Length: 447
Image 1 (cartoon, rainbow, N blue to C red):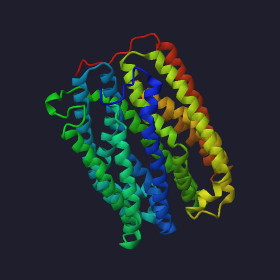
Image 2 (cartoon, rainbow, N blue to C red):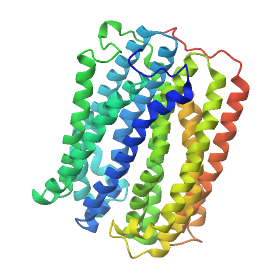
Image 3 (tube, one colour):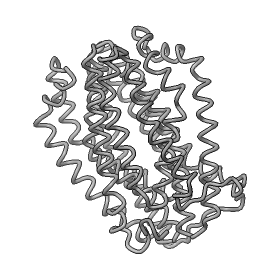
Image 4 (spheres, one colour):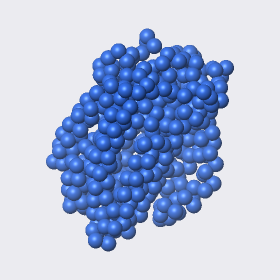
């Protein structure tokens, strides 16, 4: 792996070399997401509401590619740490086949899309939501493979190319959004077409990168051997189910907010989520890098250094979270006003105040989760995610008759994130203590 980063010799230094481009990418992605929704909010409240309701389904599509990519990344990283190149080639091939199958299933699901939207409570915005979702569902392969190949390339220690491509993709999307929405008059559909066209650049170029032999991982089906797909999905399925369950939670909260606040509830929740994506950008970069770095260290049996890296990154992530959330608290009104939300100053105040507590504890959960992904122990995260979702939905349901105006949702998220941030930390400490002197192995019996 001479051309890319060596994660094993000096993990902390390598982590920062690998993370720096990803920090730029996640900050840009968050900024892009912010501007993208800004353009949507300038159309009308109905369009903004329709897209806000549909976002969980788009998140699921993207999650397929990311989850399979993370699963493939995890096993590739561990195999590269063991210098096992043939199994590495086999891993990515199984990931590609999995992506193709998932893409076909997503396209077939369009036959039930109107029923799904009805279940989600999007009856009043059905037509607009369908205009937004159908093009994305039909072109789901683009989003799946763009995220998949970005993750597998990172397993090799190459974070620069995915960063450059994704930034170019987002720049193009920002340029096309106002053109498609306002100049061509395509409205909500224009948002979809702009996203599809710009994302296609990343997907097709990364495919070309592998097919042309520029990657250090060979893409040739002569290395395909049935069996390793199980190892990929040990990580991929918990990741996808985690995202899926969070989408279910979003649907539940959306319904509750509509009941208590009407459309403004969805607009507040959607806007807060976009603002949060900017505040947690460093967390996303650290998480993406940790999957690769931890995989290499775990495959090389450097377990003590994994624990050291965990505490090192955790301290930095929490410090950054506190600084950014406190800073945002003082400029909260300007941030929400960009999305034409100026009629709920009290709600905005409490959302920003709660964020100072929620986001630092969320840092603990996410950093811990990505450490587990890198070690191939994602099932722990799945179990905890199921627990936190039941916990938060239960709290929101109990508090709904008492706390109105969406406060029950905010309190549920606050209590849930604090509780499970602590639980995640205790779990990682237990794993490090129990397995610190054991010899982790990858099972290749079926490879």
